[in-house]
Image 1 (tube, rainbow, N blue to C red):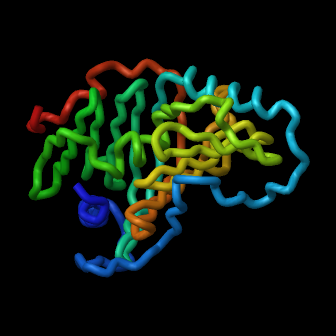
Image 2 (image 1 turned 120 degrees about the horizontal axis):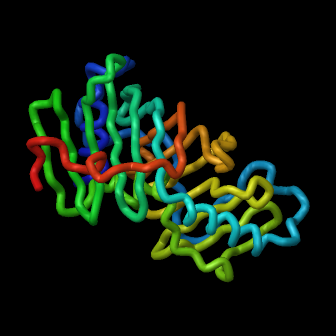
Image 3 (image 1 turned 45 degrees about the horizontal axis):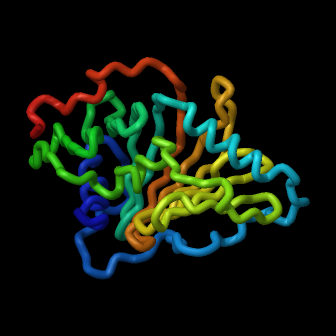
Length: 256
């Protein structure tokens, strides 16, 4: 499924949950709303990168990656804004993550009614629209926008990185993370701040401590060659909490 089809789905499915500035019609020439930087090669310099070089950069990279691996589960609530084709939609949402590959995200009305439900587990994915005419679909391959190469990447924290391959430049480290993927680590904050791959460009900002975990309060995702922008504002985090299997069961009536 192409990003453009998924983006239009997101914009339409939240009609009862969101306030709309404009309702876009399908069009061949969709305007660019964000910049999707290339995943190959160096990442563009970040603002404020001219500080003094950090001596123990290699060790910081190892510690950041180790913390990502140690975190095994996460639950969060958030507000999301999706921009595509000149239209914008806003909704509330909730997600649960359990490594190595379980990820579930729901979009909700202000009254807590689910209007969109995405589930990924064991290499498969399901999309469920309780209020939509389309019902449910079962995909052999995950929808790109939400998969481990899309929005799921923002929360699963699965990085195939050899610290020895990172390019250190003053306050940052740019690290190949498997295939054409590259991540950027802010060495002063000791957090991952960017994730580039051919399908999406993810930025993490406004990091805050949650139960000793330094986590982003804001996540920006740019995809579909810059035509799709997703802004995620985290409201609450719970880290390394028990998440039972029933939280990751396909919705009733969804294909198996």
